[in-house]
Amino acid sequence: MNTLVLLKTSVMIFFKHPVRSFLTILGVAIGIASIIATFSIGRGAEMRIRSQIMGMGENAAYIIPGNVFERGKIRATVGTNPRLTKTDVYALKEQLPSLEAITGGFDILQPIVYRTASAQDRIFGANPELITVIQERKIAQGQIFNDYHRKHGLTVIVLGSELANILFKDEDPIGKTIRVGRTPFTVIGVLEPRDNYWGTDDPNKKGFIPDTTAQKYFKKEGKTLQDVDFITIKIGKEKHSGETLRKVMRILRQTHNIRPGDTDDFTIFDQQSIAKSAATASDIIQLFGLIAASISLLVGGIGIMNIMLVSVQERTREIGIRLALGATQGIIQAQFLIESATLCFIGGIIGILSGLGISALLSSLTNLPGFIEIEPIVVALIITIIIGLIFGYYPAKKASRMDPVKALYNL
Image: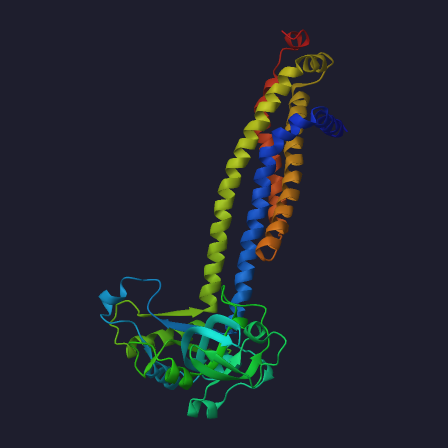
C-alpha cells in the first residue's frame, strides 16, 4: 500500500512541474529513442540486404577478376593483370560436375535507344542458364534466346521489365528493334519483374544477349577471345556449399598458376559471405548508435540527479514534517528513489514512442523495412528504471539523512 501511495505522489510531483519535469527527462527520452531507432534501422538494413541477396539466385556465386579485398597487392603477387577466361569456365565444369549451372559472361555498358526513348544500363552477355537457372528469372513475354541464337551470334535481346517500360511504355516490345550502342537488336523477350534485388543495381533495368553476340559486337580493348568479364555458378542443393566454394577457389588458383601464399587475383561473391557482411555492418551500426545513446542517457541521468537535488532542497520542510510524524529514513529514501525512477520511466515511454515514430519515418523515406524487436524495448525500459535508481540514489540518501528539526524549520 505504501508503495502505491509513494508512486501516486511521484506522479503528482511530475504533473506539478510538467515543463521542468519534461525538460529533465528529455535526455533520457532522446537516448532511449536512439536505441530503438538504431536497432530498427540496423535490423531493417540487414533484412533488406538479405532479401536483396536472394536476387542473386539461390545458391548462386559470382566470380570477378581482381581481388577487391586486397587491392594493390595483385600486381605484386601475380605479376599480370587479373583475368578470367573460358579455360577457367571449362576447368570448373570438368572438375566440379556437381555444379548445377556455370556460365562465363560479359558486362556491357552502352546507351540503349528506341526512337526518342533511351536508357543507359548494363547488358549481360551469357548463356540462357544465367537467366533461367542461376538467377531463376521467368519470362513474361516472348522467349529467351537459345543455343541457335548463340551459335550464330544473332543480335537478339531479352529486356528486364523496367527497361522495357522505359523504352516502350505501353507499346508491345516483342519484335521491335532497338540499338545497343550502334548495333541494332531485336527484342525477343521481356522478363517478369523482380522485387528483391542485390545492391543498388535494379535487375529489372538490365538486358541479356547471347555471349557470342556480346563478344562479336562489344569486344573490349585488351581482351582476347578467351577472356570473360565474370563467371557465375549455381551450387547444387547440398549441405556443405562452403566446401564447394573452397574447391572453386583451389581450381581457379591452379588455372591461374597462383603459388601458395600469394594473393588470389579473383573475388568470389556468394550469399553466405554477403549475408555475414550484412550482419557485421548491422552490428557496427548498432554499436555506434548505442555509444551515442549512452552519452545521451548519461547526460539525462545527470539531469535527473540535478533536478532531484533541487526537489530535495525545495521540499525540506515536507521532509521534516514526514520525519517528525514518524516516517523512517527508509520511507523517505524510497519516496525519492521512486520519484526518480518514475521520471525516468516516463522518459523511457516517451523515448520508445519517439523511437518507433522515427523508425517508421525513416522506413518510409529510405524504403528500408521497419523491423521492431520486443527485446530492445524491454531492455530500454529496464535501463531507464536503473538510471533512475542510480542517479536518484544520492539525492534520496541526502533527503533521508536530514535532521528533522533543522528540516522542519528549513535551517
